Image (cartoon, rainbow, N blue to C red; front, side, top):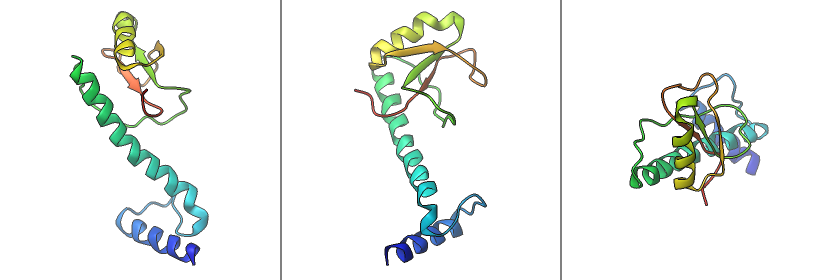
Length: 117
């Protein structure tokens, strides 16, 4: 019964947001679980952006990053290393690192891996 209900939910999802990479059976659950986590992450980005704005940082955008990051990190171009350390301190983030492509080299990039402490 549960498998049938999941398949029904997945079929409705696919009708609205079709993707050749998604199945419509219970075996596709890990793919849908990942999508749910990405949706939850969008709310996380908004909350952290608001927190950063409340302490004086200008937030110019939010997007999803695809790849593996070990922990929440502030990435910086060389000229903004000091600012990255200040942002990390303001938000309670322990890790900073030099920016990598395709990150913008004229601003800080914050990648979140979960709720901040």
